[in-house]
Length: 156
Image (cartoon, rainbow, N blue to C red; front, top):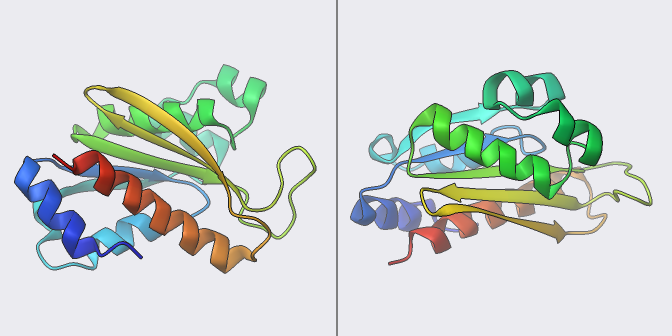
């Protein structure tokens, strides 16, 4: 796992706050950040939006994006991140939506996780295929990857 204390230091130096919008990780990113003493200086809030309704109500994800692309898509991850950024008033937002397993389909296999990262400069998205590693492993790898994305964004 990316050392959250390193992330805390980077965000402090930038004067940034962070928020997260999580689906398949169910709050694991927020927990990892807030496990570090002093995190209240940089952590604004987190959104656990497991259902599509929660994504729409709390983050403003459009029904069109959900219908056209499904919850596990870069399009929805982008809307989750931009919605979290706006709602929290933070400087950086990370979003995660994926298929932790078990299960999945040929079209959206177990281990596929979509990430969104939003700042004032814009939003970027990425899909990572972690593979059918089992639910706990996919979730922990997604958490670690999300923390790494935020850390990279906070680099000067």
